[in-house]
Amino acid sequence: MNATLQCFSNTDKFKNELINIYEEYKKDENTSKKLTFSLVEVVFNLWKILDNSKYIPENFKRIIGEMNPLFIKKETSEPKDLILFLLKNIHEETNIKKETNQITNNTPSLNPYDFYSVYNNFIQYYNSINNSIISKEFYGCFNSMTTCYNCKYSIHNILSINMLFFPLEEVRKFKNRSIKEKVSIIECFEHYERTDINPSSYCNKCGIKCTSYSVSKIINCPKTLIINLNHGKGIEFNVKIIFEEYMDLRNFVINPDSPYYYELKGVISHFGSNDEGGHFIAFCKNSNDCKWYKFNDEMVEKCSFNDVLKKGMPYVLFYSHVDA
Image (cartoon, rainbow, N blue to C red):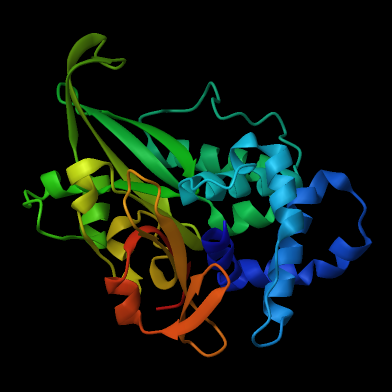
């Protein structure tokens, strides 16, 4: 929990958004936003405390435990569970839903073979029902495209994303690397866009079963991009990942107006045996002094980016969009 909260707290735009609603938090007795306000309380106190002092997020811990039994116990669980829980529930609490104007995500006149028709319909529908501090910062979308080998037509299916999941063992095999060789974060994106062959699929255009291939492409990246690195168990746990402090994704996004240049702001790393639970800590880059810090529960100390790369097993990466 500590590692996750530190990463969210050092995501500048989201942190500032939460701090800006602190006054509302103090006045509002609306219990429908209790999770959001408990996170506001945590972030506000983390950034106002004096040197050598600490803040214990007891209220936050109590509320997430009431909302999900998974977080009642003090046992170690994967950070992605808490991250997805926060993204989902804070979005629901802060979402200002608009009128849908009879727009649906399955408009009868929609041409599934035309990308721009599908994309424009998706954006119109998505924006009609989503407007929260989470959807603005953490959500993007991707296109899953399936193409028939026989007629060459492609069907487009566009979905929203709030986290990318990269299976490192699959990436290693995709790049034909040995178990001792490292894979890079860019190679993970290449694997994400790999082509999958389906020798027996039904084509609505041809009206027959035929071979097809599918590929996923990112259309719009989130302003804050969260990447979960799946290390697996046993020998798969040994796959090492190379990542950069700055990352250029312009070759992986369809929309030229999408965020594509990112700065690493937080890393959740694992220490110890994967099978026995181990311990998670966070490395975060402070926006005030541009220095890296290591957050190990109540222990906080300065570190170098080299420490971030070499100490522990990275599980989650938080990247924030910056102008190139």
